[in-house]
Image (cartoon, rainbow over all chains, first blue to last red; front, side, top):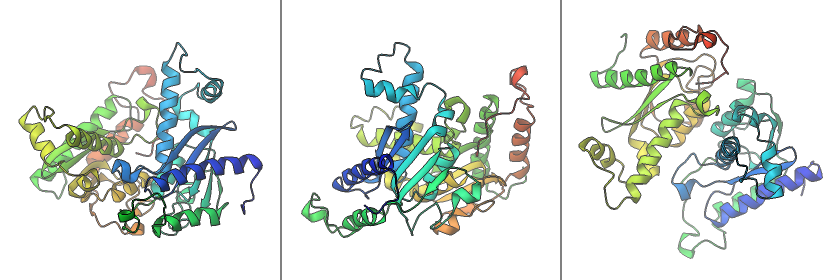
Length: 196
Length: 196
């Protein structure tokens, strides 16, 4: 993998790619994402635009909602029964404060450059960093089409194109209809456009 | 009201302002929105950033989720018990198709120019038109700070600044802490920044 990343960073990107592959197998534009807090993955998401018939259900948006659900659960669950496993304890420990603050300690790893909507959402939530696998020349909101972080002066750390070949190959597999799990009649169909 | 609008358009803007005033009274940045389909309001939303402690809960996003919930309900409810009243029947009639298509016949009325996140979400959902009350020089995504519709070539009809004075006054009331319903200790406090 041609990445200039630490071992931990690579592990998080690999987890994001697992999500992207799940999306590919489900017939979605293959984009995957993980949100990391204090070195622990607290949310995983993938593009679910086709399954939900909702053009805004990008991997990042699904992760945001997962964090907020976790946070809400943690904040309202006084019995702490939610924290059943050690891993869950670790995940929720970082969430014992308001949702507004949670995102400030979150590092985002996503296989493809976020679109303007997702970039602006991550900026407004004040995430700590965004690392993406490959640029998106059609819809990228981190500089490729529009530079949302510069325009709004978001100060999250941004690492671009850390796993370009791998991320681009997944997209090529999708657009060429080479998904081996796709039903034969659907393998070559033109799918609804998605910006993820 | 200094608007160049039809009577129906004015009524929809008034409904959006009702939502904005509700937001003001709840201590939120006063932005309100309605989604209209075939001349009927099918969703109302207002900024709920503070109440939800979620910086992305803008009026437009709340409306989008309301439409999707309605649509999902309509699509999965074979008994049609959901359509109890005539008004509800009318509202749901327009929703008898996939979520992907619903937004193409929706006209959005919002008191303040949508931010980049909301503009991009509305564009990706392919809404038919967006009409807003006043520009947002700090965060506006429809030309004031960044021109998302032009960049992404979204072809929704855009009507700008149709009720400027009214929309600006509401924002001034909020930022001056002149909300008469605000607790006295909070009337002058600096609220969390919100892009709506």
